[in-house]
Length: 243
Image (tube, rainbow, N blue to C red; front, side, top):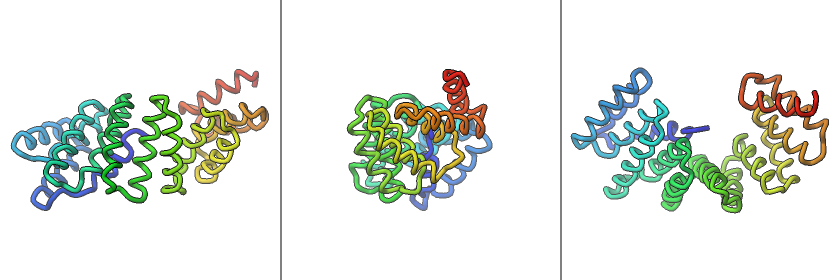
């Protein structure tokens, strides 16, 4: 889930004068991200502006260097705002993604606040931003704010299983088990073989007192992806039940 929207948003094109260079920089990331970092850094020093900083952030993200990625996107977003560049909101979302991946939810929340405050994001883009801000709020222990954001996210992205999964998990954390069950059912409809969904379904069922349903869900998680983190967690849960 990390950096998901940031990479998708890279398709937002810079002004035509920089478009070719930006596209070349982004293309280089796949084959040689270290060289892309060098090229973007040189471009930035020579006045490359917003697109140079954005490409630099994407290149750092490809190497999972989340702190410098967040800094690069933040710089791009601030420059975009000061110059009237219409990509500021997307850049703030990218900065928020990178900060979440860097385990800095406080900074991520601030970046995503800035993204959503502009009113420029619509549809899935807005939904992704609300979903990510919910993740940041939940990590900070602000579950009520996370609930508000996830309610918006599932409305904007009703076909997205991740939104329903996170909504179910949050409801479980808030001890709203009927809501958790309803939302995990929605996630399962959209992604029936997802081990993370199955793991959460088992967690909710167990807390609701439905032991056999929990066993069934956890067994499915193990069967679908035994070596995944979710599959391993489900196997541990089953072992705890003596199965």
